[in-house]
Image 1 (tube, rainbow, N blue to C red):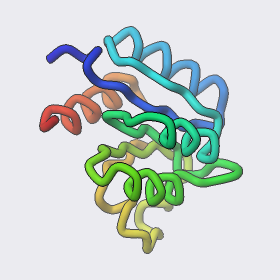
Image 2: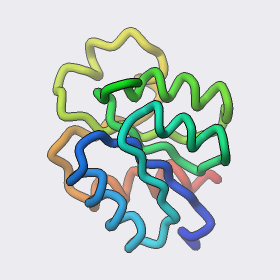
Image 3: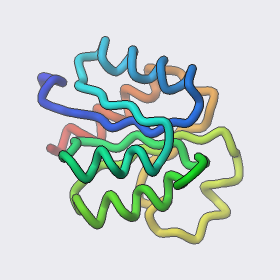
Image 4: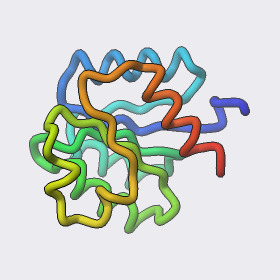
Length: 124
């Protein structure tokens, strides 16, 4: 599959993680738009569609869960992959959005992220 046909929106407030994800996803052949928080990512979603939203769960201004809810309202078939540095987020969440999408804990290995993305996008 040609990854350049897929665009990924990265929402991550930690600059070094955001830069690392952006560089590695581009190296893997994906088109990437990176945002520093959920509010900025929502603005990007309001201007164009993406194949996948890769979002941190805990961010300032708008967290990844709220971002996902708003993103899915705009694009119901959007694929979502969460990353988080908080170990209890998945099990403690009552939001259905978080249980429908995979969660990768930080620190993560880029191969794990790419495998999850490939799996999520293989149906598109």
